[in-house]
Structure formats: structure tokens, C-alpha cells
Image 1 (cartoon, rainbow, N blue to C red):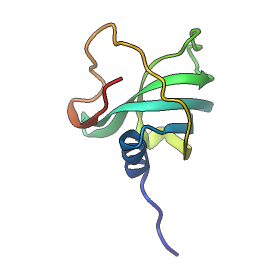
Image 2 (tube, rainbow, N blue to C red):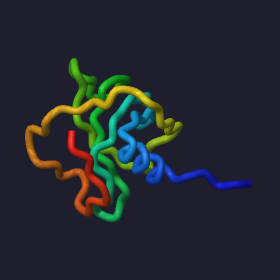
Image 3 (cartoon, rainbow, N blue to C red):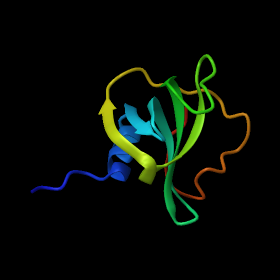
Length: 104
């Protein structure tokens, strides 16, 4: 049985093509735009801008930044759609060893 691309590879490719990601994280379906991917403390992580869906903390109008562990993402789908972002209010600390970063 052929093995598909890893979650990391899917997210990285979505960044390069400025595509949206839809996935489930901690039981919440989220619509995301990935901006930074790499590792921190030996874990694959990405900094996303979540623009739709649900979250345990709620989602403010217009969306918010989310630091997510890629190991906890499931049902990952990459899709075309508008790219969502907004300026960071402070430097990101989600990813320590940055593999790829896409500006706004």
C-alpha cells in the first residue's frame, strides 16, 4: 500500500503555494493558514493563522494565531482559498528551528 505525504510535508507544501489547511486538532475542526513550520523541543510544530472553525479557547472575530503540534493534527486537507493573516503583536516563539516561514 503506498504511503502518502506526511502531515509535515502537506503543511510545508501548503505554505509554498499559500493554500488553506483544514484539520482536526484536539477535537476541534479548524480552518488555518500556515505561516511558520519547523521544530521546538524535538517536536514538529507550525504557527498557523486560524480564521474559521472552533477552538477550546474560542476564536475572536477575524481569527487568531495558533501554535499547533503537527502530531496532534488529524484529517488534514489542503485546499485553495483566500490567504488569511494579520501582523504579529509579538515575536513568534512557537517554532525554534524554523524550516520555512511565509510572510503575511
